[in-house]
Length: 195
Image (spheres, rainbow, N blue to C red):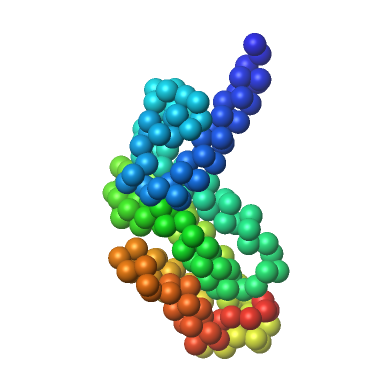
């Protein structure tokens, strides 16, 4: 069999594993999802599944990347401001508690530079802060948002609030994390149509 065909099949299987893992973890949670369960769900042995990933931590880090990819695809351009889109993602996260749990756990573990997800989290937060700050600056330039706000600081604060609310929600599911974040976005005058 030519190498390109094997490579394409390997990529397709890897994508199948990630898509299945997203569903299973969202439903059952990070701690209650085993590599064996994921392997069975995609018709592989544990060793066969780990052939596609160097370790369990890399698999779960890739699941989080895939989750971000799916979230970006759902957040079409022109669908609102970046802060509005953040609220939308957090609202959706209430339906996938296992992925919120995985994100919270890995975001702490990934502060160790040796963790397989470290670079992914550094890049993710950098990309999100930049995208949000750029959105805010564009609206400041258009005159639809006060130029007294520091776009970079507000972007970092909104992400910190979103993560903190999700952690609180994991501890107390009665907290309306999206509602609280939406309140802050409105309070700061950041919601509404993009500039």
